[in-house]
Each structure stands twice: as structure tokens, then as C-alpha cells.
Length: 167
Image (cartoon, rainbow, N blue to C red; front, side):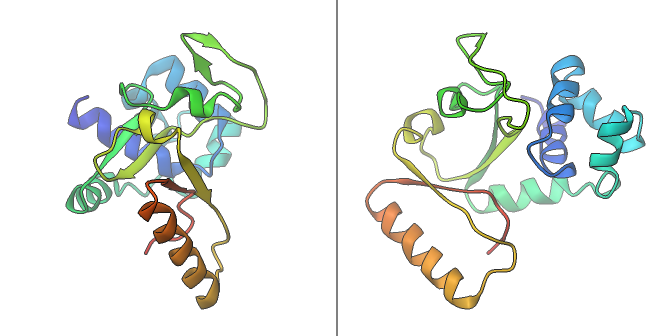
């Protein structure tokens, strides 16, 4: 994947609140670089323009990727061999072996995964736990979530988060 493609994926993964089927469909139609350009200038259908309006002019992809790399991370997309396609089979628009698994209007796999660590996602997703919550967490909630994540990681369970809070 080129730097331009990686930056496009990073931008697209933040420009709309997921899941956003309209954005995923645009990427499927024109690819990530062209999709990112269209979103940036607002040259998209009305429903997608509404979903991206608040963030379309905010492009911190280069800085985000620099920070990710400084923490030993990488951006993983469906273009990558380690993409855990089977883990997303329950979402609409997911495919396995090139065939759609099921079509569910309200769900869609994420456009990209921001990954820290060097384990291959397709392997670690078999032993994974999601920790989800709120953007308005309490200090106690953050403490408990941190302890839970650390305990899972110590037992070689991959910890997945929706990314509502950045620590």
C-alpha cells in the first residue's frame, strides 16, 4: 500500500461516525484515494455529505499515522492480508472468500483498524475481547477498563476498542 493510500484510509476512517455504509460503498466504487478526495471537497451524494460535513475539512491523517507508528502501530485495511474478514462476517457488507456473508443495512465492518503491536490480526482475532463504553467515562470506569484490558492482554487475549477515548 502506498503512503497516499494509507493516508486516504486514515482520513476516511475518521471522517464519519461508523458504521457508514455510504462511505464504504463509495470506497468500493472508486477506491480510497478518490473517495477521500471527493469527501474532502464535498463532491458526494447528499446523505454522505451530511454524515461527513462536520469532519471533512479536518485531515490529521499524517499526524495520526506518525503517532501510531511512534507507538509501534500500523493501519490495517481490507486490502491487507491480515485483515480479519471472518471476524466481521456478522456485519452487513462483509465478505468471506469473495462472497457476501449477509447484508445487514445497519451494520458494516470498519474501514480500517488502528493496531498497536506486531501480532497478525487474522490470528489474534480468534482470541479477542471488545471493551466498549462511553466518551463520558468516569475515572473509576477508566480504571476498571484499564485493569480489565491489562488482565486480558496478560492472558494473550487481543483487546479491541471502538476508540471513543484516546489515552
